Each structure stands twice: as C-alpha cells, then as structure tokens.
Length: 251
Length: 355
Image 1 (spheres, chains in turn blue, green):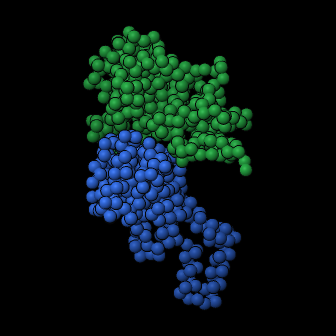
Image 2: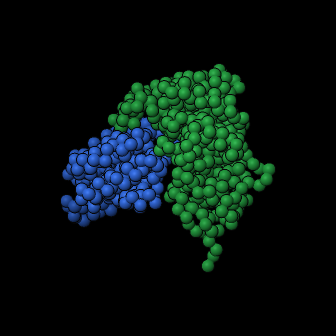
Image 3: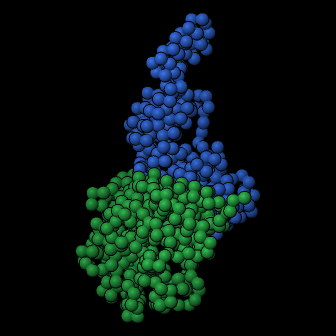
C-alpha cells in the first residue's frame, strides 16, 4: 500500500509536500517494515505460501489482501507462480503429491482469475505462457507419465491440449494446426515405440511446420542423445524438468 | 594432462573423466540421495571404493571371492526368443527352454515365468496356458521358479479397464473422483493378483515376483501390499518377492495407506518395512537412472538409497539391476562394463543379498 500511495502522490502532485510525505513514508517503511522491497517480498511470500498450502480459501484471502499493492503481473509472477514452482519442487521431493499439485493449481487459477481485470488493463498485461500439444505416440498405450507432465505444464500456466495415448501421427499435426501450438510434447514408454517420436518430427518437416514449433520428447527409453538424434529441441527427464525446459524454449 | 578414465552417461554414451571429476560426481549423487531420503551419505572409504570400481582397468569387473550373491532374471524365459517386440536374441525357444538355458547355462539361481504382456491383468484369460507352462517348468527344473508380472494398475483405467482414468479426472480437477477411481482399481487388482497366484500355486509354482510395484503410483503399492498380505495368509510357505518400480512412490492418490503408513512419498528404506510387514520374503529396491548424469553420479545415488534400505530391512534385499535402474545406463542391452561395475558396487558397498 505504501509504495502505491507514494507513487500516486508524487505522480499526481509533484510538490515539495508530496516528496516530503513520500520520504516520510519511506522512512517509516524502512524503519518499521524493512523498506519497500521487503514489503513486497513479504507480500509475495504470503501469496506463495498460500499456493503451497494447496487451499483455495487461503489463496483467495491472500489475493484479496494483496490486490492493488503491487502490479497484478508481479503478484502472479513473484507470488502465485513462485508458489506453484515450490509445489513442483515439493512434488519432485515426494513431499507433495499429484492431488496437491492439482489443488494448488486450482487455487492458483482462482487467484489469477481475481486479478484478471487488473491484468487486462494493467502494466505488463500478460496471457498464457504458450500453447502445448502433448500426447503419447502411436502404438504406445502408456498414459500416466504423460498425464503428469500435462498436469504440471497446465499448472505452470501453459495452455495444454493433451490428446491422449496411442495417437496416430497425423493427429499430432492436425491438433498443432488447430490450436496454433508453440510446442509439441511426444511421449513413449517403450523402445519399440520410440521411433514414433521421430515419425511425428518427420511429418512436421514434410508439412513445413518444423521451424515454427518446438518439440520436446520424453518417456522411459528417451534420452538427451535420442532427442538430438531424432531432431527434437529438447528432452525432459521428468515432469518438473518438462516445465523448466518448456519455459526455457518458449519464454 | 591428467589421466582420464572411461565411463558412461546414463544414456550409455561413452565419456572420459579425471579421477577428481568422477569422485565429485559420486559425491554429488550420494548427496542427492541423502538429501531426498533423509538418509546417511556414503563414507569416504565407500566412495573411494566406488571410484576404484569405476576406474578399474578391465572391461568387466566382478565381486571378490566369497561375496557372490544369488542372481535371478525377470522374464528371462522369453529373452532367448524375444520375437514379440521385446529384447531377445532371436533364437527360437519356448519359455521352458528359455528358463532351462538360464538355469543350466547362464547360472541363474532362481527364475521366473512371465507372459509377454507381463502384467497380472492380461494373464487372467490365459491362466490355463500359464499353469501348464509353469507345471512343465517345475517338472524339468531344479532352481526355484516363481511367477512374475507387474501389478500395473494402469490397465484398470479407461480405455483399458473399467475405472475412469484418474489422469483425465485430475486434469479436470475432479480430485476426489480420481482418488476413488484409484482406490477401486486397487481393490480390483488385489482380487486379480490373488486369484492368479492361487491358480499357479496349485500347479507347483514356488512363489511370485511382484515386479515394478508402484509403476502406477501409490495405488499400485496399495494393491500389491494387500495382495501380498492375502497370499501370505493363504500360502504360508510361498516365496514372495516385492520388487519396486522406482526409488520414490509417486502419490497419484496421495492419501492411501498400508497399516497406518501413507504410501505416497516413501523411499526405499521406508518401502522395505511395509513389504516385510505385508509378508514378502525378499525386497527389490530400485533407483532409476538419470540419463543426463554420469554413471558415477547415478551409481553414487543408487548405492546410497540401496544401502539405507538394506540397513533398515530384516528381510533379504535383492536389488533390481538392469536397463535404466541401479546406476546402469538406459539402453535396451546395457553395456557390460557398466552392468558389472554397478553390480559389484551394489553388492560390495550397499551390501545387497541378491540381484
């Protein structure tokens, strides 16, 4: 609140009095609260902690309190999304589980929704992080690992179109066109179906789409070396890494 | 220039590193396991021993005389033939012949009979065939012959099974429905696994290998432990191995318990206690290989997890070692240099009772 008030005063009435008031307020914050930066850090931490609690009510209360005290984009990036990243770390460490990840994602979505108006008009108005089509290649019926990756990507803020498992090669192409996707995730759990990932990449080339889309491969037999060999842009070892690599390639 | 030693990445790629760099990777892998599992890291002596094993000049290494352990081979019965998309050497051979070759030529101490689908659920419609083959094996072989399959709860979800896919439900934020589905699939799985093993025990099977417990998360573990408990009650003398799918039980459900202990998030030294409580005779600790790290890092991590499990366990631990587990690279036919080094380390440092 202090930061915003100070900015408002100095922006609308750049007088000696306003500068005095701002300075006085700054001193107050520094002495009693540890300065603007710390205040924002506390704010962000409250939001982050609320997401890590995986409780929607906590997130709604935290966003209600934080609204207007910092730009909505910052509240999301440094608060809610930071909390979601922490949830990802705890998931990887076996401290939180898939239902918690989903509850946290649901809570975060509710928080983001509350900031939508501000986001649409405010500084740094942002949209989704990117569009990703995700699926298990043809001949491979394994679903669970790919579903976790989809969930984590969705929770991280990507628009994910999970087209299931045993997906015919052409379906990947069709869905990418339909959604104007930025990335495609190809999963395979068997050495015998790994080749399917390459087939999708080859078809992307044939359709002249390869340069406009990033390709991520994953699944038990996939490796970094295989990603290079089959012409993918990256390989992800697990769901958390898939999120990190997607951000690396798309943001 | 410092001498460099040959080792591999987790994906099998050949690399060369100095002793200092290899040791640093071993320490880092050990530290990762210690941090995640809240368990002790290896001692300096143990890490030095691992370094000696990795940098040993020979292409293959072996344990010191007197430290040999029993070895078995999951689904080895079909690996001689391997004409159905699995890894085999293409020599036409029945499952009986494959098992006998393992017993009499390869030195396997125990074996298991497995079906090509290698999950319990698809065995139901072919149970008579499985019983007949098991009986033939028992009549022709001396070593203990178990039946092996994956609990694989994934096959109980749509479109393969009757229960709604929890992955789809989760994505739609239907969390309690997803949890219900996992629980129902687990209960169904228990009935199937017990029924299948009742049939196989009647034709003389020596026991069962639950292979890759937890592959579909905590629901898989829930079903397997309860099936083990029921089988132990019904067949007090049957031999039961509980082999895991990974070092961490993934929490797909999150709240499932066995005997008051939450299953999600358990590490090998915690998993083994429940396997023992359920009635397993042996436990198969597993640590998955990270393909982006070196075999030194992976072996350090694997041995640290496994050693903690061995220490916590009152039953023998038979580590799962092979393609993509136990510090061995993720290759269909894992390179023998890495396989023998990982095996020697898991026996001599982690102290496993079998592989």
